[in-house]
Amino acid sequence: MKKSKHRAFTLVELLVVIGIIAVLIAILLPALSKARAQAASVQCLANLQQCGLAMMMYSQTNNGYLPYPDAGIDPSGGNWKYEWFSAIDPYLSSSADTNSSRAGVAGYRAYTAYKQCPQVNNEFGLTTSTGSGDGATGNQNTTTEYTRSYKMNGNLRRPGSSTGGDGPPCKISQVDDSSEFVMIGDSISMDAIGFYPSQQESGDFSMDTNQPLGTSAAAPPALRHAGGCNILFVDGHGEHEVLKTTSRVLSAPAPTVKVWQTEFLSAAGSPVYAVGSNAPGAGQYSNFLSADAQGLQRNPNMPFHWSIPGTIAQ
Image 1 (cartoon, one colour):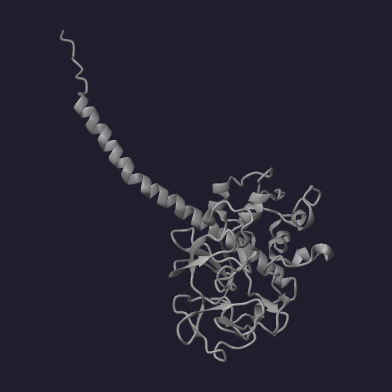
Image 2 (image 1 turned 90 degrees about the vertical axis):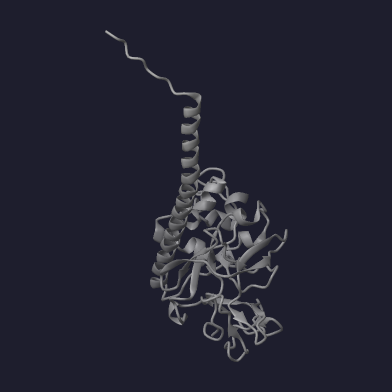
């Protein structure tokens, strides 16, 4: 009885097989990477919608008022509860660890994953409740404070007067075109500008595409998802949008980033920026006068509303 002979692969055949596997991997890896990035963007938008729903619930129990969009509130009288980052916690079954060693307003903030883009969470390892954690009782430190990527539209509060100052937050009923008026979105964080723990825009609680270059009044949107940004609007729906960009120089240490353009242009077609004083001037617009009265035209490259001058001022 003859014994069967097993023919071994030749070296050339093995190299061909390895080459085919390498080609398949090269084809599949970009697709897998794109799928992971898409999943992160979807989760980011879901997080924003969760925060938006909590804001709606807050508004319903507070006579229609939205929370404050920034942290410029004296915490001594408990006003920290009305700043959006903390105000939404009771509606999300979250609370800060007020018994921790964190001082000042930091002791009242819950650094939770749903207030953050998952891409930023993953990049900085914000997955535990210790050290640089982001759990319901996560500790504040350099990382948690300056990687916060979700920020509220800073224009959703009324100016205190035509000469400056901040007034109370606005009511949802005061917001025209709520389906196109930005409420909260994915904004600048350390993943976009580098590890700058003292970089103002990264640490802000509010965002605005209309702030002057190099100021620290609010952060611009971040384009971390396929060159676009996830935005939630006042009516509660969210979108991933890719718009035409411009370069912006942030505050110290002054990195340059690509961001969306302003929503208003001058008659000559130049960008027109918002200012804290709300006083008209060269390249600036006022929240107390209508866009028409100021000779402003809408920028076709910015289809959304961040502010509607003359409507939320009173």
